[in-house]
Structures are given as structure tokens and as C-alpha cells.
Image 1 (tube, rainbow, N blue to C red):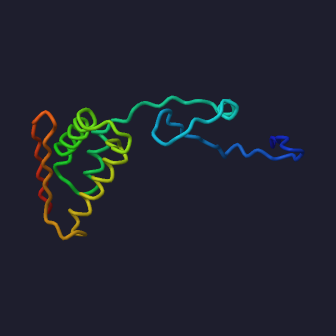
Image 2 (cartoon, rainbow, N blue to C red; image 1 turned 30 degrees about the horizontal axis):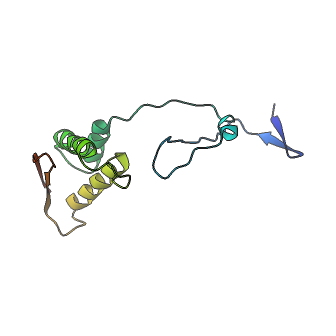
Image 3 (spheres, rainbow, N blue to C red; image 1 turned 60 degrees about the horizontal axis):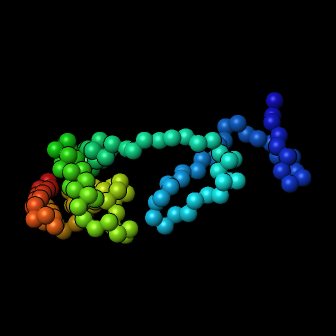
Length: 138
């Protein structure tokens, strides 16, 4: 039995195999809130903050890094410290999207799509703490 919906004078068949999903990030820089009238048309689903270390580890393994567990821990600690201690200006992004970009680039370096044989990250925080990472590729 097909379901129908009346929309602007036309009868439209509803396909139960199709869905429309909206991702809303309240407070995300550069985004505006949906009007309440539009929000009311959708059923809210609550999601949790992703486990960055696990995502990082899986991405590093998929990029070919054998020491992915150790590297994932280092990378997530680095991003956590950067987010906490560096500038809070909106154009600095230490979220999952930025982390993913770094991991994809590391994979490209490892696979030889870049002239580098390795890369070194040396970070000095405003508190004079120093963090060094050296990734040997190959």
C-alpha cells in the first residue's frame, strides 16, 4: 500500500525506502541555525563526540602505518594540547577534519607520492613545553 502526501495541491507518493537527514552543528563557526519551523519537521537524533584516537588509529593503519596505535596516541595528544593551549580564534581548527587531512597527507608521504622520506613536527607551546614527533616513512 503506497502512502501519499498532499503538497501544494499535488498528491505525492511517499517511498518508505528513502530518508532525508540534516546534520546540525550548533555553534559551529560560520553556520547559521535552522528556523524552528524547519527543525520541527525533523526528528532529532543525539550523537556523541567521536573517539579521535580510534579514528586516527584506523586511518593510520589504512594508510599503511604499522605503528598506528602509538602514532594515533601521539597525534591525538598533539591535537588536544593544540586545541587547549593555542589561540582560540575561529580560523584555527584542531578538529577531526583537520586531523584527517594531516593523516591523509602522511599516507601520501609514506606511499611515495611526495619527495620527502620522512617528516618531523617540532612544537613549542607558549608554556615552553616542547613536543617532538619524527615519522620515518618506509
